[in-house]
Length: 257
Image (cartoon, rainbow, N blue to C red):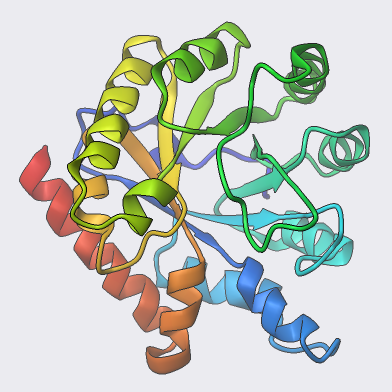
């Protein structure tokens, strides 16, 4: 079931293996273009798991622009690896998560006018609400994560909030190829997170073309990748897209660890 742990979740940062969680939001984006039944994100999740994905990620947005409530209901019942639910820190979303009990909830910033998530969560904005949501999730036995910028004070603030993990926003790295500063920031944030006892994940804008240097950061134990993988699946199929990405990650990981 979706709330059960993946044995690979217990891998330490010094181990070679790095988990791949596939975000299937944009399978739902294709479906919603016609408001029909296909392509079905739940079927996509099954294919991804069979291809070797270690988990499935979905973002239930407040405006329901792609993933729908019924999708999350079905995924919670059918995912055989683990389900990572991305959501805003609202009472509505907290109630949904506590009822469905995914393995992990990642709290993300959300603005209705944005095309996609544009930055990391501001952990200094309304910390009382953030702490209340995190406490409610922990009480339900759900692992918690925050999607944050690779900023050292933000990593430290996340640790003070008592989360299990942080997911480092790799957007600046993906959007500025050749600039060493974003990659250096990710390395520093990942190192600090591990030193503080946090599990370190990463994602946003990653693809076969740019994932290698991120996969090579030993402290990052989990990558969340969706848009580029779904786009690649249009040409080579979703199984091929998972295998292709997994191969690049493994090669980079093997060189680094």
